[in-house]
Image (cartoon, rainbow, N blue to C red):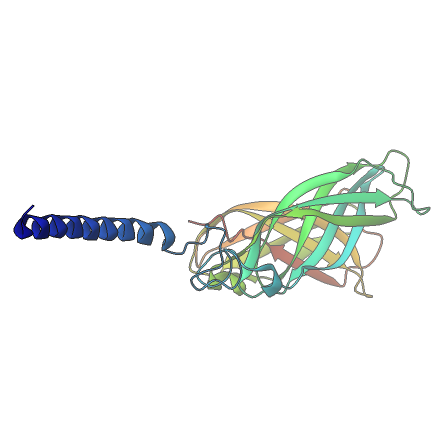
Length: 259
């Protein structure tokens, strides 16, 4: 074989090798240098942990302060029928829960369970004191003395819109009437935010002069547009058995369910 042919063969092999290296390198680059995402089961990009923190909506668990449950209590509605409230606080400024599963149990004076466990789900808004309310709990001939509130499971903590970290409503002066027979309460709620809200759960808690909760209820307001007001109404079939000294009104808005 001539020197010219030998050189030509070497050039072809060299070019073929270079093409193979470039193609293989390109493939390997895209395989092993994928753009970081918040769902790739790796700690990369701006993440603080695996798929959490940084630009991810999911908040890392070690960045979260636990929910504080300040009290839980049953309230007699009528003979053998109770409602119950767990009053809690989320101290995280910009993080909440889309879903929290909980359980209520009612006990008598002897610490004996007197009703079927009540299971429910709720959301947790950021930077708020709020409450969970359950009603229509039957205890037969037993009287409820204490309530136990247990968090069964939680979804991942997620970042929330900064606007939800602050008060969304202005609460008017509640009007409480007919206290000695069948109490009635109405209160005006004004939407001071920049959003419209629908199907707003509103919980009311009434306190005596020792600041102990003596009554509670929940209603729903169909709609409050930004800058507008609506009235919320509550009623009880029996008197509270004590003097009402303070009334707390708690409108709740799910920060993960807004357009």
